Image (cartoon, rainbow, N blue to C red; front, side, top):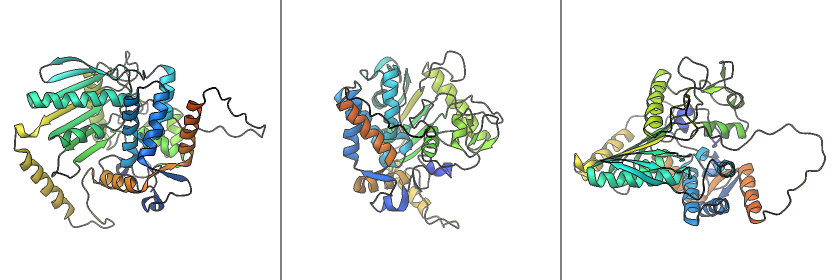
Length: 400
């Protein structure tokens, strides 16, 4: 399947037990399909850093944000990858993002802290929060940090995985712009409201990482499907009249996403909306006072405060091995644990390159050219028959 293929929502949630993104057989074999271009992670990071620096970010900040986006692409989640750069640059131009800020710790109370995101790139604020969680865990064995005035942070699993590698049980959650209908409703009242858990495995092994939106499909993945002209599976969204739809365009025409798992996903989303929105002072996204942003909370627990870390790692690894030995159900060829699909995809793409849709690659390289020659007049279109207007490919500011 390609990055645009969202025919099974669970298979496309970070931390699922199916491959995060096959990217087509040709791409996994090291050759891009006719609609894709393979780009190395370092080249893509340089490209992203160039664009972000031209928008006003400092060199180190630009590289860190670019690398975060590339890491999402490496993991197989292009919905959170470099395809978001055009939208990020729009946010800078519109004053949503202040590229000169990086976030700072605003206050500490016991084992808790508040990070002021300063409307910086969300990745910078979330990274500062993760570092504060680690520091609090070192002092108190537990740490809880909220981030206010926070922009889009990318994949929550990036931060929880890093904390798990430091010997912590890590949790992250975030609310977002309302795009999801409550169970039984037809209008937008909730964000996609993602959450992530991460736990360390044996030394040298990638951690167990669960990371997904509480919507049946993340908005970014829906946007990928729309850009590539693909439909989605039933049960993911409603049109503006409240009727079930498989057309991504119906969501962007006033429809709504649905929570995953019916009332269960809905209940989890409600808890995240309240916790992330209120502890971060971002607000509940469907109530007055909410002005956009992503109310983010990170939590860490130091494992060795309860059991020896080595014992925890060994037991977790043994459990993962036991899961892998489970007799297979019909139609399946192996049992994976959360985080393994992303780790495999990352290894493959580091070796062979990241498959980018040609329109995305073209848009990014054009933006680089514009940043290097800002006074160059825009290319004038030759008079032709009017074409159907293309749908906007930029990510919306409505959650992961």
